[in-house]
Image (cartoon, rainbow over all chains, first blue to last red; front, side):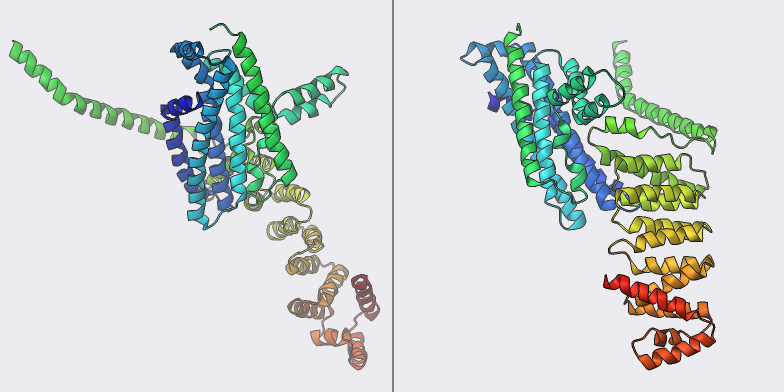
Length: 249
Length: 271
């Protein structure tokens, strides 16, 4: 299932466009670096890492939200599910295929980015590889979110929901701060704390801003962040399986 | 009839691309012309920038804070360059730099070039505010107070304030020796004789040979004597100390003050 979806997705025009766009933007970051007054290296690295991150999330969102919908729309889902394949297996297969596509995309963009940094500065910080690894993990979480919403509703609505969850996921720390401020009723901090733990905290997987300054993360924190990311993926896939199992096709 | 129709059809097919090309050229020219007219009609004092609140941008940044800071910094450098070459006033300079440094608190160039641009525009106080913000985020870095001192020295006549900033910089670990030099110089310029002497003696005793020479020469100028007398007076040789002491007394130098400062500094160094 994963292999079939991988082959299907890798031929997708969206992916080709994203790949081309990534190469063009990475090239453009060199030019942007020259435009800045001072800190050229920082600007080039920020733009490079930002583009890799943005396009990985975009690919996960665009391919993930339409993955299930396409199968239902083309009615190929009936062919697959008529075979001894459980719905959750179908869904996990889709996610694994998407994970493989994202790995290829991340790998290609990483090679392009490292090449660019090497050409420009004759060396690169190995922490960048860790940052791209975390970006890949974040894209896997977004892919799981996309499959969850994609198994419930149309690709357009799913994209809106995923984007909303993505924004909240990067600002969930704020839920804690806001709920603890002011003379709010006693239940408000409790709700804030519940939402903080219930919603995926994507800021945990974001180290790109600090690696540019040569600051890494402690090994234990990095490992726990990876475990957290995989845990969130598993939780989202379980929810998706639950939603897809009860859905009328 | 059929032949004529066929010829017409063929001619249309031949000339159609040319028509499209002409249409493209004409509409492109119209678009570029109206863009130029729009720029001219907007006037030179039109607001070059609008700066959104940092809190809102930080929420929307979704972890791309550095990238956003870079984008705003590029906008700042472009407009600042434009302002320098075209003499236009730059609106919202401080809010823009404040936003950039909120998004990326470690953006060194934003503090450095930003403080320069603010000072150049006559907003030295704002430049110092920006550098104070950097100092509060990098408390062990001497560069921020040093730069604030430089801005005050170059773009205002707040010498004592500049000396205070250079003093703060000199007290940080790994500070450039010139920080203490500038502190003493600022006291000199501000005619704060006692503070200047105090600082020059500190520099003299700091151990840096080149700086000690500069300090001795500055002290000599303050006392209107030759710097060699101070060298001899503060040396370990008892005879030289006694002889130089007499010469300095004759020149009206307060030896008690000189001794006391040197002793205090020696005690502090030993501690």
